[in-house]
Image 1 (cartoon, rainbow, N blue to C red):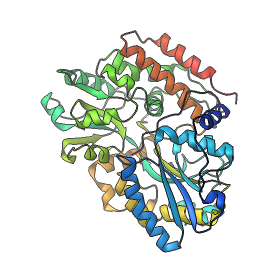
Image 2: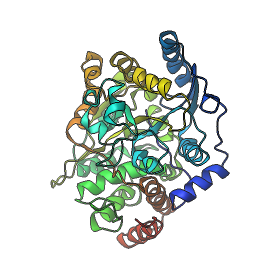
Image 3: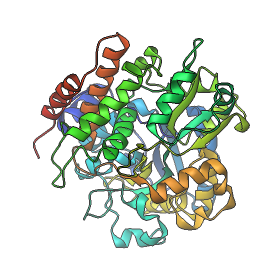
Length: 435
């Protein structure tokens, strides 16, 4: 699964890049520098329960690729807390891996650096063609009207995971379908030292994912059609306030969740400390923490009772990109083709509990399980891509930090009002670079 964790709070892509260099995101000494046609470097994002689990899952597949092509892949699994800084440092230095994973929300921002190989019709032809991929996944692979900067690798969507026993014990016979029901149920569940809902208040990118959906449901977005930020629109303010109010007003989220940023909400759910969590593709993580699949259920993210936009997830996922400065572009293209091949897509997405963005691989019965069916149907019918604008990564940092600060206020018992939310979002909008 993916848990995007944003980089330090800075306001321009240039500043982000400088911060990344200062943080020690250095250039690798692999074949991108040496030009060895029989070697590739690959930065993979942490998708499994641990980095070691990723190394085991990917290691077997990379050996298979080496056997087929004679090309050895030097793997580094990069934690989400470091990944964006590392990538930005590589775009500045000109020395990065040959192939890398990027969170799909970063596609347009990284595309704007000019460091990634564009996926033209010719390049798509090298991996079987563009039409092999699901349209919604391609919609989060770069700015509209331009060749994508990356290729979809794993697709994910948000869902409501709930503890079946906790709901039964509280006399709740089905998971909430509306936010009003979630809050009402949440008050029944938040007692005896346990809480209804887990959040990650200090996880900047997760904050963005949640408030993006809520803003959409309030009829708003954080950017207008021209790509200019509209953080202080009534709908955006209402979406942020609704999310923070789960802690501040509704009292169904533990105050300590304001400090969570490293999957602690998933651990709490697995340990029975919380009854529900809004997450993307979390099943394998719960299993790793000792839960039986029979212990939890999966339902679509709630919608407003009074109607509104039927968006209940961002189009989540991981894309695969190639650095332009690779001295082994031919090998890099072969590797992307291997990882996005039909059979490999089945293997990898089964291992990570995600949905293949490749149409043929989705037909495998393994992706028809009840929990994956919810995610697949959400992606197909009610998910929307985050704005594919050059300033998206700065948006995640600035607005994600605003939400983090509001959670801190709520945890301290201070009031969170429409005015205080708007004040934080105004400050975040002022941090955005000029278009």
